[in-house]
Length: 391
Image (cartoon, rainbow, N blue to C red):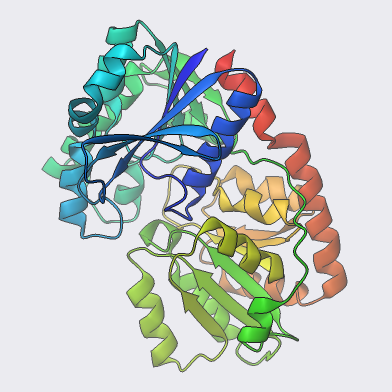
């Protein structure tokens, strides 16, 4: 099949999990014999449309306004224009390169109109990879008022996303209840996050040497640092563990709560926290490889149940996972039952601290890291994902 993948963020310019996941999916689809093109926006593109190759994958960039690391109003405007700009910029490519299947990743919620237009042009099928429920999580986090004009605006695009999809892949069984009484329920199936299994060979301690972390237990967080993650809770954990000099916390990424984190570190004079801006995938893997524990956290007010893709990066490098998620999230049982780490409920700082102290044991970390890799191979291999999407 000829397959178009649509995503709002892609390698090599992003460290975010969506970019890495979609690149690995593109490569696996090609391995399985499909012809793949990735469509993604770029705010630095000089031309309207540019076709490039990344690791053998054809990537079609279209010129867009900035949608990452900018203020909320500019982001909302530029994301709202994604479908229009994509078609206007790359219309000639679309007309001369028909596709059999369109696979769109959400977030963003704003590609629905583009998918509808391309489906009609090509008489193609479409698959929506749905990884979060926006604007619902913004309401849960009290960033938006339910029933407000802005909520109805975003909800219009959300529903368009669902209505044009032939199938919708959600990341956990518990999220099926979000669609249970909706007109889209028959389209929904579980599509777990995925990763390409790998064995990382690098053995040196560059980052540990550079930042004097040689004898530390490094708790590592990489990815978005925003309201949806309620990152203050991980800073609270660092504050609680300041009496354990062997514990060190590293945060790598960007997002709305970076200033909050930096302010708390300064306010409490925390010497056990390092905060880094986003890095490329190669550097990200180097840093994670030298860490001991992978961190996750989700806002306690979420009503949907996200499965952070970074968990699979941690599993892939044999790192145990420590974190907290909203009550009822499947991820808690998945990790705890596999003995691949410790997941508690968001807001329960006591349990989070107790679990962190357990992971100061090297023997415990090693066992749980090995269990995580085993779980990855059983449930989250990109090969399985590619087959499910195309059948």
